[in-house]
Image 1 (cartoon, rainbow, N blue to C red):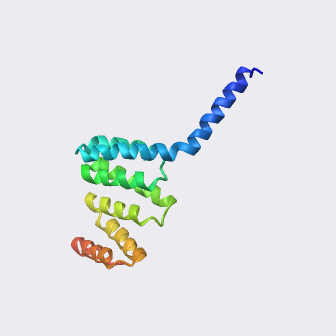
Image 2: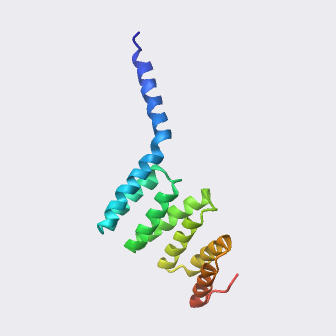
Image 3: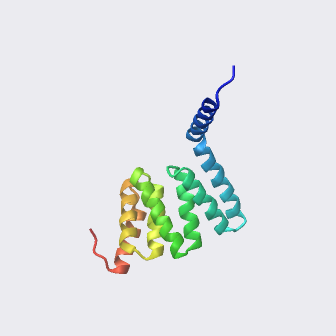
Length: 150
């Protein structure tokens, strides 16, 4: 039995869509592992490119977002830190309970110089985890910049 051209195209497209749905988390993990190799050899810029691709493939992957955030912190450029804040904020809108990503965003806010936002995130992590270290860090950030406590 021979399938017509339109049926073969339909079958190929549906197979590709199903493969993407099932396999895109694994593609993101593979990209993260490749980025990790570049981190080990000290090439943070190339690692950041792989982490950017991993976040693009699976924006709901906490490991991809966290690695992207920490490689941006390592690069320390204004553009990378702003991208870090944007990616982590988008992730936290979908997954507000993820304290690791909130902590990564707080570090990026602090590196940019947004102490009030960093303090709010550190305080939220400290309250969620019941960890006084983060609350004390939030207090220090607020005192350093003279922002009032809320």
